Length: 169
Image (cartoon, rainbow, N blue to C red; front, side, top):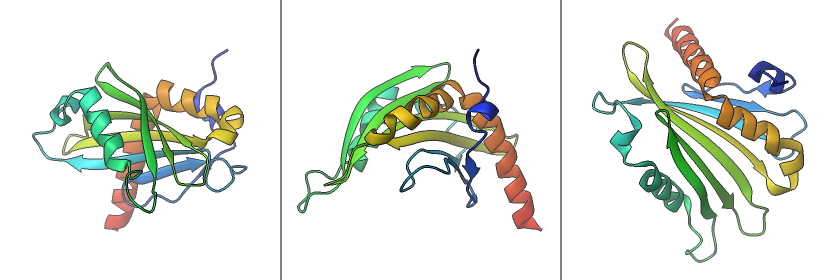
């Protein structure tokens, strides 16, 4: 039996959204581990598909290398690309981030572009957990992130419009 997104996240909390950020987190998660976030970014009219940012491998490499600071002294965050692929108009990126002296944080991101009739928007859904919590959160986060982008896409679009409406009042 396949669980729905609502069932997978039934016991999780929804953080307060700041304009275009929405986060789900497990109440048992330590130090903000076990998080699923949705970031909605407005785009220019010329960005109508993900390929506007380049092919998936180049995009993923640029993303991860832009986060990597392991070459600096003192040592800073180390970023490592695990995998990247494109499918059905979406980019799937798996990578790790590790601060010196800390466990690696595993991240799964799904990116897609859509328009709400007025604006083009980049939707980025990212699930993350630290290696020690892989057994507890890994499968759940990976399922929601990699399998469930369409739910979050629609949900985030709804919440984004709702937050925009509330801010306008």
